[in-house]
Every structure is written in C-alpha cells, then in structure tokens.
Image (cartoon, rainbow, N blue to C red; front, side, top):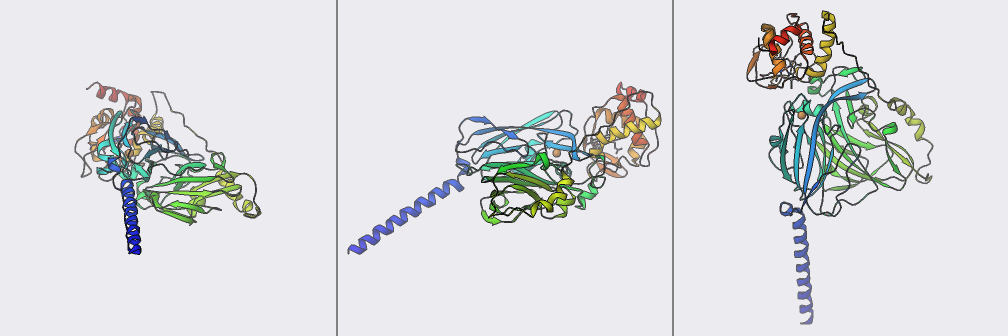
Length: 482
Ligand code: HEC
Ligand SMILES: [Cu+2]
C-alpha cells in the first residue's frame, strides 16, 4: 500500500517535470513569431573584420538598419583594382547583429552615383525572396521593408538583382547574426570574415583595373579566392589578433558565388563549430565546410603564441589565389603544448608573398577638348571601363538576356544620334539588337558631353563597329533636342 502511494507520487512528479520541460522548449523554438518587441533602437553596423557588440540579455526590439549600397573601385591585390559593388562600402558588407524576435526595419539606399539597381535577399528573413522583391532600388532611391527574425543563427545576405551571379561576384554579400534568447555565450575576441571568389578579365595578378569576366564565372574558374574581398585583407598589419588563453570566435561566411570553402586554421583545432551557422554544435573539428551562401561559427581557445594561418584548405586557393589570412597570438609560450621550433621556417615564404601592401595607381585623364582620334580612344576606353563595362562587358559582348552587346551592334551602327541619346537619357523598353530582344533598364549616365563623345567614339571604333567619330557638338545638339 505504502509503496504504491510512493510510486504514484513519483510518477506524478515525473509527468510534471516532463510537461514543464516540453513547455519551455516550445517557447524557445516554436513561438518566436509571438515574441513581443519593446521600443526601437538603431543597429550598430560594422565593416569586416569587426562585429557589433553582443546583444546579451536585451529584450526583442524594433531594430533600425540603414544600409547604403556603394559601387566603388578598390584594391584586389598589389597593383590590381576592381569595381566592387558593396553593401555599406565594404566586401563583405556591414555585419548586422540581431536577436531572435527582433523586428528589423531595413532601409536600403542606392547611392546616386551608382550605375545599377540592386536589392537584398537576407537568408535570415522569412518571406518572398528574403526581402528581394520589396527592396529593389534604383540609384538615387531608397526602399524600406521589415521582417521578424524567427530563427537564431548566422545567415548570409546578398544582392539578388539579375544577373544575380554577377552582383554576388562583384562583392554584394555579407552576414546577419540572429542571437538566441539570452544571447550567445560571451567570448574574448570576435571577428567577421567571409570568403568570395572573383573572376577577372586578366589572370591573377594582371595589373590595372580588371573587369568582371562572365565566361570565367560560368566556368567557375576563379582568378581570386579571398577573405574579405581582397588579397591580404587579413595578413601582415591587417591580421586579426588575440592573446594566449583567450577564446576566439569567428563568424565565417561564404558569399561564393560558386566555390564552397574548406575552412581551416593551421595549427588550431576548433573547440566548437556551430555547423552551417545553425544550432547544432560540433566539437573538436579540424576543417569545416562553409557552403556558398552559407556560414559557420567557429570557436577555439588559443593556447600558444604565434601566427596562425587561416585558409581555405582547397589549398591552391590559399597559396595561389589569395584565400589566406592570419591570426596573431601574443603571450607566454607553453612548451608542453608546443615546442615552438618548426613552424616559423615553414611559413616564411608565405609571409613574403602576402605582406606587400597594395598601392593604388590612377591614370590621369586627358582634359583637352580638341583631341585627336587616338586621344579620344584612350580617354574613351577609360570612361568605358569605369562606366559601361559593368553591364556591356570588357569586349562589348554584353550579357545574354540582360545587357545588349555593343560589339558589332546593328542597333548602335544604324543611328549615332539615337546612341548619343541613350547615353544621355538612359533607355528602357524593348529593343532588338542583332536579332535578340532586350527589355532592360539602362540608367542615365552622369558623364559630360565631352566624355560621351569620347566613350561613343571608343565604342564605335572598337569590336567591329562602323568607326564613327562622335563629336562633342553632336552630343550638345542631341542634348538640346536637335
Ligand atoms: C546599368 C547597366 C548599364 C550601363 C552602366 C550602361 N548600359 Fe547601355 N544598356 C543597358 C541596357 C539594359 C540596355 C538596353 C535597354 C533596353 O532594353 O531598352 C542598354 C543599351 C545600350 C545601347 C543600345 C543598344 C546596343 O546594344 O547598341 C547603347 C549604344 C548603350 N547601351 C551604350 C552604353 C554606353 C556607351 C555606356 C557607358 C557610358 C552604357 N551603355 C552603360 C545597360 C547599361
Ligand atoms: Cu546588386
């Protein structure tokens, strides 16, 4: 009799315990849509390798994110530049830090000097296109939309404007972290790094401003595979740092557009990996796979001093294409953990390759208005590579179904005045070029009459076109409507 009573009390207790446990799990996993928001705050945004402050135990809020798109020339490697398209001025774009249940009010602004429309697809957002359909924005405009963060994790965001691959290949990606209720455990050092592959007209290391190469991108034949947008972003003086005994957390993303990353830190073992940026934690990992359009959070305690090389362990990318960074750790040696004899010699050759700091080299523009054909060609080529190449491509070949060719273009060669007007005023609506239909948007190009004459002269005198020499007077006449 007595034992029966005891057993039933025990069973009751167990049932209660299980019920409570179930309930608490449910509030965390299933009802994030119902988490109330109190007040609003402006999100802190950071450029790589920095991350904003942890959310800690703060309540869910309306989080205001203001992101500006900037198309700008930057350094790919020593002597080589590239026209990057960026979220917030950096590649990868600004890091966004939120917590689950936040209502993110996102304003995307497209700088008026930009050439193209863009948008944003946030993998952290639940809704059509991850925000892409609500954020499509032309140069000189801005769009606002909002979403609630339902799932904790580390997510990629990227531009999703056609041709999508090209926008991503030019650097339009970044990370948004959604911390769980109560925040991630605090660590000593946190950094942001993101891999990307780049496709340039010239081979790796070819000097000067390099344009995007669509065919190489389609063939997945990358000239550069880098962390944080360029060769050497995390080496030498740019290395990330920590002290012996500290725990380092890396928010690692991969923008692609094509390649998956075999992410590895030479001489370290990841104590913890939040696999694919989600909630699954794996322990004691040597190399973790970061898919294109995916992420991972890796953590490790640094036990000994030295330079730890961060690589994509698809190793030719590290030593020949740029996917190499450094973590410099200072502090006391620990001879038991590591004797400290071998490593220096092995990696010195690497240091030599990557420590050179890139320099910018700008060509000077010819300003005279009475130029020879050769001078116009030279200046026109420069304007073309700065202004038109993003869409019409290096050899004027265009991009199928998106940007019409200027090479051997029947449309172009048939009518000079019409071509001038297109550059002056922009063009929308269906046109047929060399038998193929295009229905896109060419934005008005903000360049002077002189520059329009030069760039069109260059176009007309290149790639099998009819060699028209376009004059400044013709441009002025078209402008005034004659
Ligand atoms: C934002 C991308 C973009 C940029 C930058 C751009 N264009 Fe275009 N261009 C287009 C699109 C799209 C069309 C087709 C418009 C349509 O379908 O109505 C076009 C059409 C043309 C055409 C007529 C069609 C043809 O193939 O002959 C000419 C000429 C032209 N662009 C010249 C230029 C020149 C010169 C520049 C640089 C000063 C330039 N474009 C910059 C996107 C661009
Ligand atoms: Cu874009």
